[in-house]
Amino acid sequence: MSVVVGVGVIIVNEKGEVLLGKRCGTHAPYWSIFGGHVDDGETFEQCAIREIKEEIGIAITSPKVIGISNNLETYQLEGKHTVSICMIAQYQGDEPKLMEPDKCSEIRWCSPNDLPEPHFEASRNSIALWKNKQFYQS
Image (tube, rainbow, N blue to C red; front, top):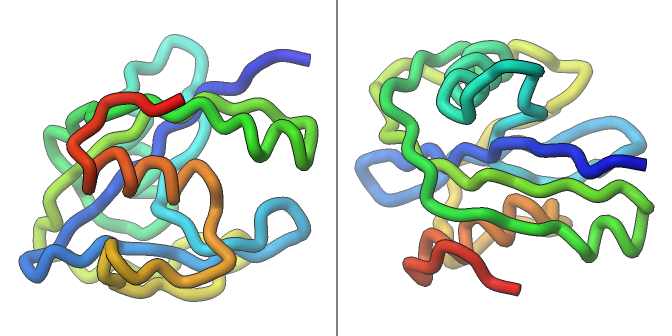
């Protein structure tokens, strides 16, 4: 088994709220920031821009790496080890919409201090790093 690298993008609106989606399906049916796995030869920024466009139809520019999350709780529970590159992007005003309703059933702006549950470990870790101005927490 190998470790999978993904990006998670915290999209923030003018009120300081973060954009979350409610995932569907048997793997990780949780609330989460948007993102996905890094493709071969792709930069983290390219992955973030591609995934956000694919998932919610909005264009982000200049996503920035703000932290790294080693998601060991998910590995212990599911046997799937992911490392998440935590990124942030400002909301540009396009209206987000569900582009993959088979993967995500709902979109919601939420206070980073009051996250809906159940919440995906990688997303919770990313938001905590951002709120606490930390790059990594073991």
